[in-house]
Every structure is written in C-alpha cells, then in structure tokens.
Length: 392
Image: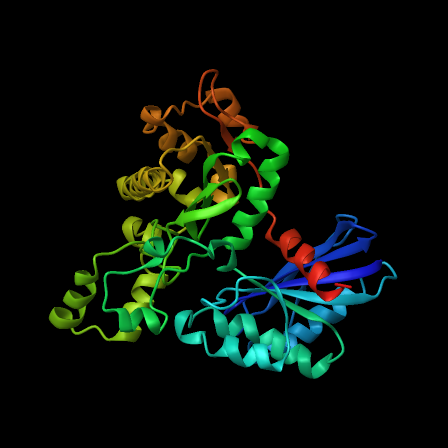
C-alpha cells in the first residue's frame, strides 16, 4: 500500500506533526515540525523530507484559532507529500480512561466518550480532540485514529492503580492511569532489537523531558509507573511539581486562600525545575548557571529519579537494566551520571566516555545494562494508524 499518514500532537499552544510515507510494510519519515505560539504569535518551523528547513509566521496570528492553523498546516503538509495522497491521520490522545486501551478509529460516538474524559485531563484532552473535531468537519472521509497515552499501562495489577480512598471514588474513575505510554511502547519494542535479553527481563525506562516519568517494564509490559491520576504525579518536571503531599494543597487553600485555578497554575506551570531554581525550566540553562539554586533544582530532579527507581525496582522484584530517553534523558550526561552514581547498589555503573557520547549502551564492564536511545512517538502513532485505518 502506498500513500501518506500524518501524525498530530496538539497542545494548548502548539501542534506537532510528522508525515510518514507508506511503502508496503515500511514507513518512511518525511516532513515534520510544529506550530508554536498559538494564541499569541503562531510560528511554523518545519523540516522537509530532504532536510531543508522552513519557517512561517502569520501577521495578526494571535486571532487565528487552532482550527484555522490546522488548515494551514494540512495545506503545507499536503504540498510536501512528494506526489503521494494523504490517506489517514493519527492523533496522540492523552487520556483513554479505563475503557480505551488500544488504538481506535475515531468517529462521533468515540469522540463523545473521549470528551467525557476531559475532567481527568483538563489541560490536555480538549486540545487533543479539537483537531479531530475540525477534521471530521473539513475532511469527513479521511480516516482518523486515536492513540492513547494511557493505553500501555492498561493491565496493571489492581493494587498498583488503586488509591487509599473510599471505593465509590474508584468507581468514578479516581485511580492511577499513567502517561507517556506511546513513548514507552516504542522503547519496549526498540529494546527487543537493541538488547533482546534485557527486553525480555525487567527494565526501568526513564522518559526525561519537560514532562518526566519512569516506567517499570517486564517482558515488554508496563508493571508500574510514576505518573498517576494526572500527569502531575511522580518526578519533578520542568514546570510541574511531581508527587506532593496532599496536605500541602489543603494548607495553601486554608491558610493562604488559594483557589483551585491558582493552585492548578502553580502546580502545572510555576513549579518543578522552574519553581525550585527561580531561573528556568530548561535543564540546559540550569546546567550552564552558577546560581546555587540551579544546582538545587538539578539535585532534586536527580534525587527523585533515584528514589522512584528504587520504588519501581521493588514493584518488579528487581531491575535488570536502565534505559534513558527523551530530551534530558538523551542529551544530558550529567543527569545520567548523577542518577547512576547513586545506583551502584543495584549493579549499575556508567562508563564515563560512553556516557559522554550519549548513544547506545553506556554501562561500564561488569555493570548491568544501561542504554540511551531516542524515543519516537510519531512513528508509533503512524504504525498504529496504518494498522487500524487499513485493517482488512
């Protein structure tokens, strides 16, 4: 089968996209990029299939909606298909709830059910679904497929996902779901090629970026993860707090009069590396700073990773290997070194030279496996989209 698949990852102020050419069973990566600054100053920055960079800005762009910019993006993408026809679109949908744990063809009935999950991911779900709705109107015959970020974590033992709350709340969906599942699914598959023995065993994958989490994966399946009911839980992140004593929320409300909207803004946008350092949410800026607060933020980031690795090791009854991925995980030797320096008790020792190189296996001789490998959520979405949209 020939043709092209477009993958979309829509957020509150950006739309990331990638074009894949289908050729029999192969998927070839083509043009890709994103529109940033939606609602303020939209800016398209992309790379064509032959590696040529391109940019575009819109005059008066602050007035352009997601839907209008999506139309512009589709026009640009279709002009870079190399003569192929756009056959399907795959979407990253953050939340599939307890019901949806496989990629699915989108229709109005499914869209309505996914809309109902918005209270579980209010900052993500509406923006993920907006392009789906717009495309159903503008391109009603174009197949669309939903790929859920929660799906990989489906099938945990009930005790892993249960909170210590009255059971009526669990019946209403208050439980742990986990996120970054599309990335973890890709890494689990990739490790079957890179290190089949580790892939069949117990590994902890560290997806470390502006959003950060860990996943305990045994024989290719998620056993536990650090994110829970929302993408706020677990590790300290770029602007998100990570795990927090719920009593802190009560204190902020009762003693300082903060309302829900203010607390939401604090925990999602003003905490994490940014909040602790008072400088930046960008790890690169913190690594380049001599301000002691930058060191404090980095140290906290590393400490929480190490602590959660210990917890996930306990969940699996051991850990045979580590895998670092995503922006910080792939490109920050200092963070990897800081994490592994505290894990010698688990049999992990870095080779400093290999760690500085930052790709492939970076473990010292005699150490348990330690890997650095890029993730590819777009390829995972395109793969599922092809399977679902063109199932015989």
